[in-house]
Length: 171
Image (cartoon, rainbow, N blue to C red):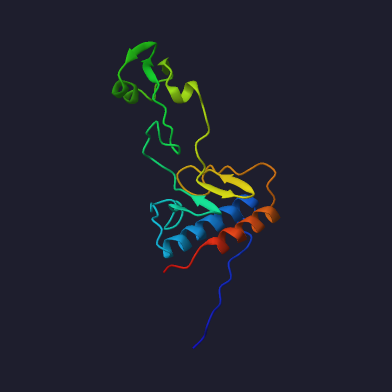
């Protein structure tokens, strides 16, 4: 019997800080699921790419939220009143969608909602509490991910090691 060992080509691996963080968070989600945390599954993020619902004294993780409720600290969905126009004529939303190929379509805000009037950042999907490191992503880990400016791989690695150490074994 012949055994073939396949090693991934590192030229296609993302070894940037964002890539390392994304990979760490993906595997953290898998670990948290194994410890009983609820996770979201989907298509593009894979089995563990959406995050888990988890919080302890060291860190918090929360998947991207689609509830679109104004009071949700992760969504804070806009509820501005809008008027849709095609060729400068007011149409309903369906009429506007049917004309997406036209060059003169528009949306005009007629009444600004509380969210847009007093914009605050949404809660992060992942937070290390000390030192404070907050990470946001859009729908799944890695997509539109925002990490703190100036964060280094060394700082991340030290803080993330504390995250792993803080997870208690399931009873």
